[in-house]
Image 1: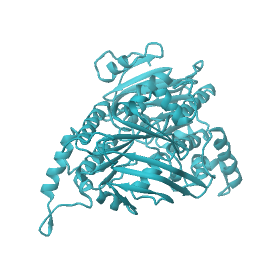
Image 2: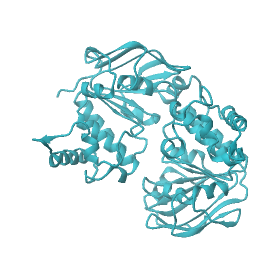
Image 3: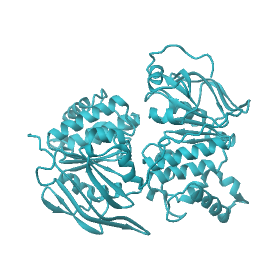
Image 4: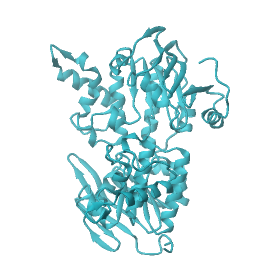
Amino acid sequence: MKQIEPFEAVPLLEMRGITKRFPGVLALSDVTFDVHAGEVHALLGENGAGKSTLMKILAGVYTRDAGEIIFKGNPVNFTTPRQAQIAGITTIYQELNQIPQMSITENIFLGTELARGPLLDWAQMHEQARGLLAKLHLDIDPRTPISRLGVAQQQMVEVAKALHHQADLIIMDEPTSALSLHEIEDLFAIIHELKSNGVGIVYISHHLEETFEISDRISVLRDGHHVATEMTKALDVEKLIRLMVGRDLSEKFPKEVTPRGGEVLRVEGLTQGARLKNIGFSAYAGEVLGIAGLVGSGRTELVRAIFGADPIDAGQIFIDGKVVHIRSPRDAIRQGIGLLTEDRKQQGLVLTMTTRENTTLSVLERLTRLLFTSRSKETDLTQRYIDSLAIKTPTQDTPVINLSGGTQQKVVLSKWMATEPRALIFDEPTRGIDVGAKVEIYKLMNDLARQGVAIIMISSELPEVLGMSDRVMVISNGQVTGFLNRAEATQEKIMEYATGFDKLLPTTA
């Protein structure tokens, strides 16, 4: 198919005057947005700006209160996601929309199964699925259940599903949030191929650098309003951030160096099968210890083991110099350890519960007397963190599923701050949240460090590791391969240790 140059033809998609209200919230107000065939149009804004709401209206998840949608020259009014998909619109959601017990093939072909006579043609479906995976450089048996895949591989299966549907318009919501650099390169190659075939792409991301690399135009929403649409080449990062947050951010990583206190947490000889091998390190009061490594290096497995979420084969954990026995998250919490998990929706929150219920979930014992939980104490504690963390929620009784990603992350943080932890572990603390909310999280880390909390931070974003860490511990293939202090840490040095290029193992932690 001949490539269609953007802006030379009638838009593939036009959304005009879109307005959407939820109880107590005006989510979108008179928003206009369009996409041309063969164009990558990035849709940016802070969490809660209305990006996901706008796309869910387009995808048939929500109904609009006002406005019109023109797709391929015709007015449309999708009331179900299936209608949008049949019309040629496919969405790759940040929250993976898969059935874990089913295979890769079954997830890709769900609702579009191939048949030969009265029977499903599994051989043909497996073959086509294998071809789609090969395009993404995934050497995985398509009969593998989704539950056996890592988050990054599950994300790429969603891309494969979008390719299968041969959509005219693909909405990509944070498609690279769990991908390695190599996988991002593969995804971008696919996007360029789709563009050349005249497919329009809506690209939502909080990674501004990659947005500049892949997009043709950028539209910005703020507080439910359309702020601007510009050619990407006419913008720079500073101007884009100003459009998104409505102010200048003086520093991307507002790190405050706090004098290091005594040792809070020490790990010795921690081993877990072939995934973790004789790991040892210490974390100190007032320090941010960054943990870096490639996807699959063992970073998350390490902190889950420390937190008691997964069993270990060998090793000891010390708090304030004394051996502690942590066999469950409850044990870890009682020892003063908190863990903000990588997947806040699945492991950090109970989405159907309210802001108040999630905030107090880890300290209910403290708020309960004679089997009755004090509602007034719950309310007072929750309000303290709503105020101190600037949590944007209509009420304490708002279910967290209705909150933006950045606000959800603050609710998780409030839950752990309520436990008054000695050591707090952040696993990908800013994944999927906007630049303004990131800075707020960093400032909260500074506050915690000033209070003497030992902070351990895992991040796949090396600038974040370098910007916020006092020391960096690098893990490769389940082993600690290096420690770097703030002055000597560079992206190049971290990558040397992370890829195993530098084989010198540290002798001290």
